[in-house]
Length: 240
Ligand SMILES: [Zn+2]
Image (tube, rainbow, N blue to C red; front, side):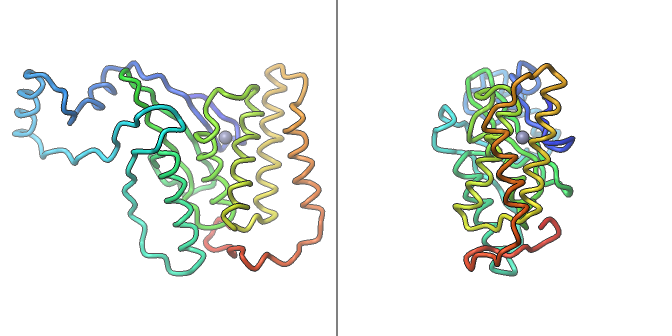
């Protein structure tokens, strides 16, 4: 797992799993066990409660493939229109990109990674705050964005970070979510952090898209706050 550098907070990772334990876990419950495997499973079943059925199904292929991951959501019924909208966006994004939430985080940091198995199947995973306000939604969409744009597609890493944030901002706009000054500050600070980190590692030229995005956030932050669009969702929850 490597740091993805949204401050000390966001990390992305690309794991090529060779660990036999992971492979075994993956195979557990599949239809392709040999006789020996079935025998072991039977003995295991005697000793242990039967494992719950896996909620992750194999994805048929590349990043653009239709998702086949089902996400079990324990969300309570939303109590407001804003909560319902955030829940709708959460479910839509997870389904569209076939991403599974390993853990909802209680603080504003996130991580995205994928696991490639020997059979070529891929698990796409994130940890993120649950989208309940503008900032948590931005971080959630940023992590989804890493999967949407694809790992290792953009170099240097600060450019990959930019594209994940670009995805988050564009998606917030498209979904009618409120892009607050706190969101813009978060994007700017994250990109500045990513640039500083890249420069420490030898980056000489800041990609123009990244510099332009920081300037854009600064410009918008300097503008007087206008009334929120009527279609916008007002901040709710503690992450707004
Ligand atoms: Zn990131």
